[in-house]
Image 1 (cartoon, rainbow, N blue to C red):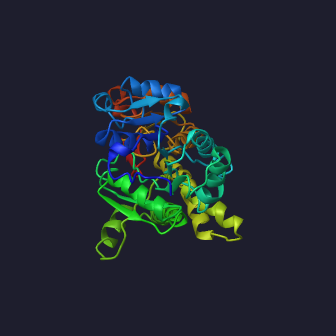
Image 2 (image 1 turned 30 degrees about the horizontal axis):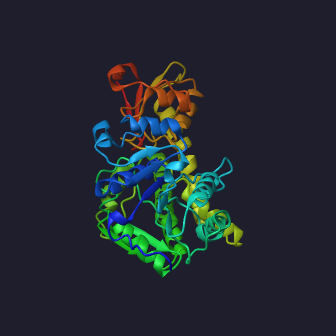
Image 3 (image 1 turned 45 degrees about the vertical axis):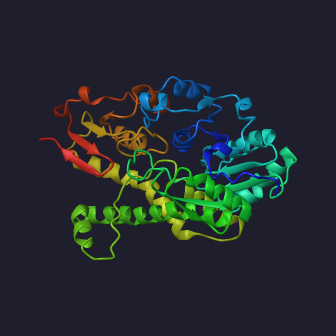
Length: 398
């Protein structure tokens, strides 16, 4: 290998974070705390300007926290020209047909490949299907850059485990999975992340790390689907799910998952990446597919329960939904099921208001056309039902 630095100290790293979202920003924060030469790049100029002014639209960092950071935010690719470490954290969603959408990943890969030099290290944190880095990203890097992996640059994958709104399981204290295209890449990337995390787990291959990331969230999706199906059954039998869970949890090996609306960027997305790759290999995944169907449909069941809880006639009834984001306490609107719940109720002639203490009024209107209320604008006595959608709680006002 021609590369001489081992990333054992921050002074040898000129880090460029590609993507300033829920994954990229925490990485920028972490590396900025141990060194000053860090650049966070994003093609969204508005996002970059907001961060420069101390505003995080996701609500994960305060103005004071952003202003205290070293490093800088940039929207020009030229700002990455002198970097020797590139960490790619762009979104990998699915399209309207639930097929993997690698548009942002391919664009970011091409951009980085245009500017890398000998000795560069490229790490992907974006969630992908097994084989994506080796089959899609690597050939593109080599084609555009003219460099060869293992000879001119390092390459690896370190799947993100960011949980928006979670102040306990943070980047610094969770186990960081790392992998490399070869042993040298693995060693360098492991040393890089040891600068900012307490523990590193080295996967034996990039494909193992890619698959492990998917399995983490597919496991949750399948288990939540089981709870959702059970909740649907027990609700119709007038058996309280919360009591069933309390009693069942007294068994030592019972896993206490709860029913819920599945949203966000991971659990409702990642299964489709494995489904797609499996289908390419002639493999069917009926359980994983059914879990997705069950969790996508559960909002309909919740809507029916709300409708059944109201006295006829439904027209003119008023319902308050407490929460718009995909889960409580975050501003993340990705794949939230609340707008669909609202639409179901309104389709029955019900007047529906939504309040959320975290989501911005402007963002709610822009993304969903929802006129969001804040807590001080809500008079609970005005409503026939109040819904806490994150725990499926329906409260009937007297």
